[in-house]
Amino acid sequence: MSLKTLRNLKRAEFAKKIKSYAELGKDWDSYGANPPSAGTIEKAIWFLDKLTDEELLTVQPVPTHEAIEFEGENFSIRIWKE
Image 1 (tube, one colour):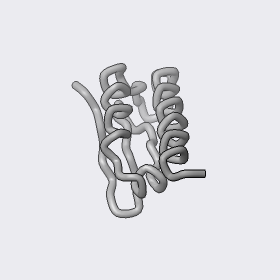
Image 2 (tube, one colour; image 1 turned 120 degrees about the horizontal axis):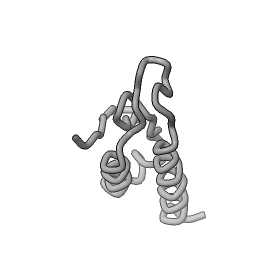
Image 3 (cartoon, one colour; image 1 turned 30 degrees about the vertical axis):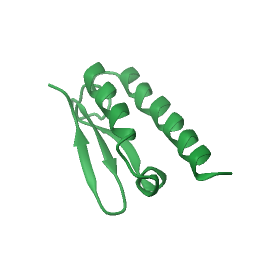
Image 4 (tube, helix red, strand yellow; image 1 turned 90 degrees about the vertical axis):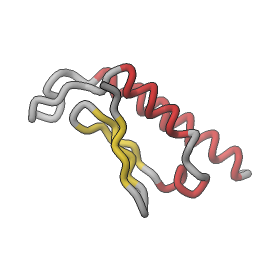
């Protein structure tokens, strides 16, 4: 499988996963968190295209309190839209 194909598959997998965060209920983390907003989800999906191939293959997007955090081997970034 080519790197480009692998990248596209990973991007599609993460985009689907990130979109699913909109379905999280209020207090989904039992600490009062709201699900990420539509704007946050849109910005997180946009961010996928900014990652290098290596970053995309090693990163994990996870929901946090009203944000989405990308945790990689060498970085962590939190995305939210007010």
